[in-house]
Each structure stands twice: as C-alpha cells, then as structure tokens.
Length: 275
Image (tube, rainbow, N blue to C red; front, side):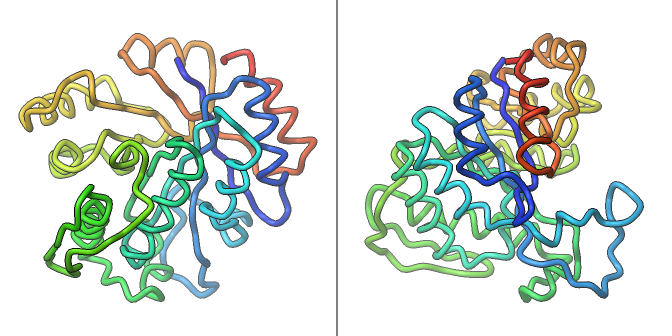
C-alpha cells in the first residue's frame, strides 16, 4: 500500500521544502494539503469535529504555492490537494493553476476536491451554500473543457467558456481527481460520472460504503480497476492499514501534526514503519 501524508502547513510549521524532502527521503508516496482562504472570526458554523476550531485553520498556506515548492525539490513525491474548495475558485484561473503545477511536476498532481463546511468562508466568496455542490461540479466540468486536447466550449448552469487555447495541458490528459464527502448515492453517482474516485475522511464505515460506490461505478460503465478509494487524514495503526489492504485499497493518507520541524520529523520517523 502506498502511504501518503497530509498536514496543515502554516506560517508556524515546518516548511513545504523541508517536509517534501523528508517525505521523499523516507519513501512516502505523497503530500496532500488542505485549503482555507480565511476563517471569519464571527461565525455560526460549528467545527465538524466538535469543540473550538484549531488555530491552524486560520493560518493555512495556499496549497498550490506550497505544492509548487515541494515539486521543485523532489522527483517522485506525489502532490495533491486535500481538499481544494472548488466552489470558492474562479474555474478558469484554477484550471490554469492546476495544469501548470501538473506540467511542472511531470504529472505528479492529484486534485482532491470538496465542497466545504464553513458557511461564512463560502459566503465571503459569493457562494450560495445550498447550491455549492452543483456549482462545484459545474466548475469541474468547465475545467475539463479547458484541459481538452482541442479548443472545447462549455456551457453550464453557473458558468461558460468559449473554445479557447489553454496551455499547458495536464500531462496525463486530466489530473487524477478524487472527491471528499460523506457516503451516499448522490455523491457516488457523481464520482462515477466525473472523477477517478473518493477521499473518505478517516476511513470508517468503508465495509458498507465501498460496495455501493463500486456498484455506482460499474453502472456508469467504468472499469473496476480504474476506481481509486483513498482513506484520508487517517490516524494510523498496523491493524487499520491491514484492514484497508484487505478491502483492496492501494493508498492511504496519514495525518501529520501541524507542528514545528522537530515535531513533524518525529511523526515521520514513527509513520515510516508503515511505508
């Protein structure tokens, strides 16, 4: 099983360059970075994990800038977002950012995307909360039109783009695209229609969820071997990773602490036994 990592890189943590080099040296498969543009101080949205919102949420580095630094000092390390809040981006700009990072890294980028939980953050981006998922899927379709080999128009519910020259192109046609979100028939149908797989947070409940996703995937005419299910932000143990392997999963993303260099390196040394 490929073992990747994720952490909240901030202005107070280990740097992207040092982390990327240490990950590649130890044989980790990848680095996934989360995204929050800002966290409004006055907010009504509760933290999904309960309690106070951790400090690092309001200090998160831009994932694309940080991943570009990681790409520049590594050769093999996978680079990913976990997750890009797609509804909060201009899709034409985002398509260019993604294609450039994927091109410069030699096709190492994975787009992990999701729809967010913080209503106040989304509202400041002009996102209507109840339509954010439809908006996100529409923006993904528009980006795929820009990544197409030939100038391709797109006319969607929320945005459109005329046939355009848009380079560079992602080296593999489109970057691997994984979607986060709670298990359910609507999400699984969309995953099967538009993406390469699922990023389930923590990896609980997979015994029940995976058959439903595989059924939706095969109903959409997709090859079973093409489905990627990647448990994300996992607190690791040997038993948990064996469980994932027994389910036929090939990659897991372990959660690193949002600490300084010494704390993160200690965690990497501990996690390296799973690589």
